[in-house]
Image (cartoon, rainbow, N blue to C red; front, side, top):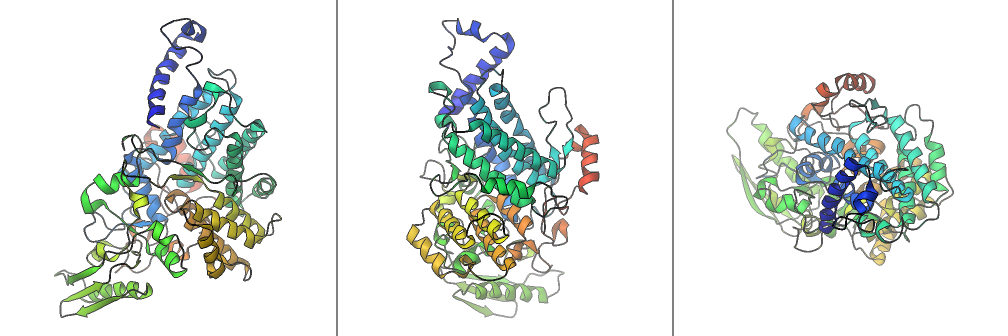
Length: 564
């Protein structure tokens, strides 16, 4: 990626010359300049791709870790030594939300630039590159709208429009599907965007220039959007989109997943990774643990991904002294009992010793225990960092220290899970249990789990069996597998919970104010992020229209598709 970014900078300069002179042929005649064999739109695809899934550290920390990764139940703060309680993100903070809005709203520019370069009569007119750009744009808008709801879409990037209107999420979904259909039709049977300099090749961080994989990616995204929209108020397109997607090629065990390999050399201020924050952000204060809901599902069902997702607890003895505060005295013991219940539910090996004004816990090392999500600040002394599992080295490895887990763009596992859900709902011709099993194997494959271990899990785990049960029970199991598959992709994990209501432990929110942080949501599950504060002045009329149509600009306002 580093080489590509250097080339990108050169091409920005070239693009400036082209736009200034309007005469590309004249530049080519300069013996000291670039020739037609040196320049290509391929050098403009790398930036929008890595910025969408591996942005710089500022949004990576504030959008992913503070918000979506924790809403998804993957990671938690609030342990002893943490700078923040785990209620962070459940109460509005404009500095954190503005970073999320600024990143996502700003990401459109480089995507739009690539589209303008490759569109008919563009500087690098190439219908196949343009189709790739359209699919990239579709991935972007699905993430953007599922984060905020109504956003600028139909008027975004339109010449002469400085303050674009916000479109309804239903219309954005329909627009994305129309774009995906057009892109897939353009690709047809083509395999590459061109030859030589006109082949996206390694500059394409998602599919390496493989157009047929792009086509499967587009169709799988179409299926995701159709299934998410299904049953939403006024839905008039989802069933047809689902039927069309099921009748065409999807990502599968032959194509594999679409993942973005992390660059190990580029600065974290260009493209970040979890390891950048973990190892150099500021000691123990900024580190995080793995959520209880995730660890419970992995440990309780003997999921072979457990040791790949997380590390066992460090363990040790910790004495917690009752604080001299204005709180009711019983709160201390209520919290101690809660911690005991967490250990008991995990089947943990530990001892507890009570005294008049203190309690001592001694937890054995080597166990997997997840930290409950959304603990209030007063719980930090009980939520000792030694007591809970942390992310695996593969997830938090520092750059230049070995391989890091890639960013998830879209997985073949999800394609199978969506087909399983469709089958349970009586759509398509696939066998639901077979599709679920294939999805689990594909989900485990990307984490290096062998087929044999995956088969053993499928054979013995109740959560992998939908051969019997009610429709809702089957849908819950599929949703849980989809959610497990989103680990390290908090945006999609959060969307799965809002759409399906599973895992229910997350979707139902919290209701014990002695233990958990209510935030601004009265304990309810967050449904969206608030718009950036700048929109209220720079695009005031359209902002106000969006709020009037969608609902109050708060985290509790449900999006169009959300069923929970």
